[in-house]
Length: 301
Image (tube, rainbow, N blue to C red; front, side):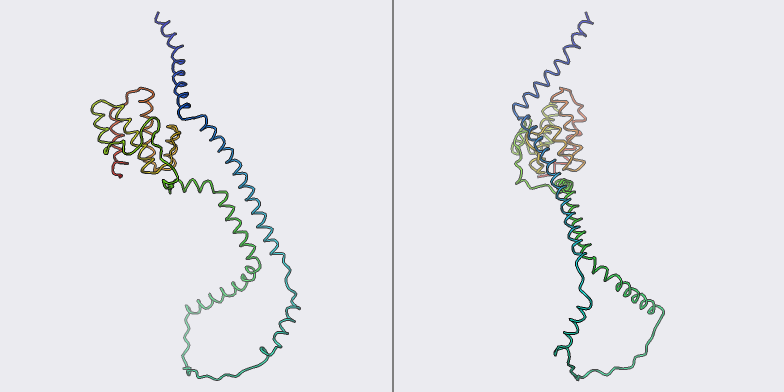
């Protein structure tokens, strides 16, 4: 008899669990339009692939234009030395360049100053003389190929920023969050009211009182609701009402400090086990989460 009971439970239990989960998924699809959200995500992925292809094409085009323009400047015809010399001679024969003027003016009388020299002074004189000779050698090279090098550097910088645009955008979103004007914070998520006026002033104190009364579910529900409200209203985190618990954890991990991300992951795991798994959590773990909440959000206004 016991074997038949165990066999029946083993057959029915998976079906029961799967049926309950599918009912949950179906209800979420009806309420939050998950199928539409997934369709939009697939559309965004296709657009991002096209954008990446367009960026690569622009990079190739800019590199080609940089090298073509540089080659054009390098291959320009140089003037004939004989022609240039004749033009200079003609200009010097003009009246403005062919006369001499003697001008007299008062100057202070120079006093004879004894010249002193030392090894240290001689060293600096020789050093500056060497630098002058090196600059005389390098200057014509820079003058001839400087424009080519300049265009190459400009093209390289533009290509670098185009290729790194996505990573740069993620870094800016992570360190400098956008203002709340561009995203409307949701009022309700997972059936929880996130409006600040719907929450008590001291969330951690109320949660601790509910926990001492043995009402763990109410305490953790209020703590989870207060955390989501703090993220979307105080921290201006871009969380949409259609996000799942996992997507919320990923968004917090990308754009909030590590300590805050770890706390939210722990709180989400405990809340999922309590709300959907109907597992009674350890009271000390609940107390630790409430204390950590007070450290992270208790002092904020």
